[in-house]
Length: 244
Length: 74
Image 1: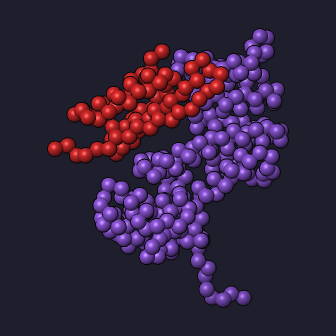
Image 2: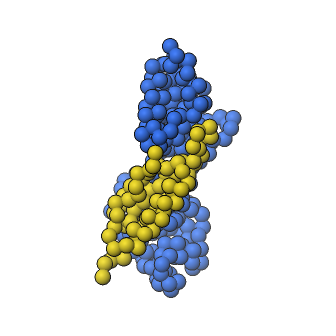
Image 3: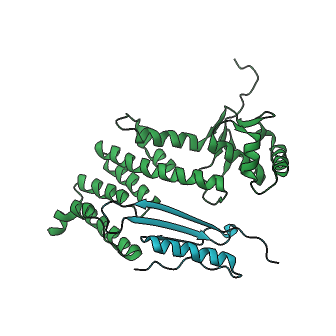
């Protein structure tokens, strides 16, 4: 028997990649710039924020009075649905409890992967998880408050991808381990630990030619970009193969 | 009067232990954030990094936007 009332749809603020605000899994008409920035800030910080702090963060070059006015304006321009996503008091602001934020889930996933010895679910190293760890926070936004959070996330996801590759390698899931390690390489092609992860997976799988190819690709890039050689440690990983 | 513009220079630094030159400084620059990041380069010598920062500031002060930092010295 139904009660005749429709449950409110889940609301979601997405800040991995392009900003999106969704209700019940569907996209909504684009919000005004100030409203997008407000929801993005609340999603990124993921806690109760003082109104004065929000205004000063989002409009740092304005006077205090003008920044507060801009905040009131951004709140006033929220659509009916997006207004339900924000809890507003005279002193502070936060996202409503029913609002999911993609970066919140992705950060939790990264921390689980990085916790030494912690058991992780299959889904934590599955394709969906690797995809979530492969996306930057709002890559085309250059506000100070975004840049700092984006860098923090970039570092966290880089280490989490390498950790995911190691866990998948230990489980003998070589194909997925390669995918996770290559995702780490895409984050930072010059970082040796990511290349080493790819090479380790190929060696564990007995795929020696692929291991040598990956080493050669990295060495070529390093020579071209920096005029340097890979470290002795990486050389040693493939030294025996090169000697054949 | 030209419209105001905001430049941005981000330096990401990490250390590759065991390398003959362990410093890695990846510099992304733009002379106007409205156009997005113009160029990214990775350098391994501290003096090169400071030179890129100096050049970028001078270019921001100058009348003509530049295309970005010079290629690293080998």
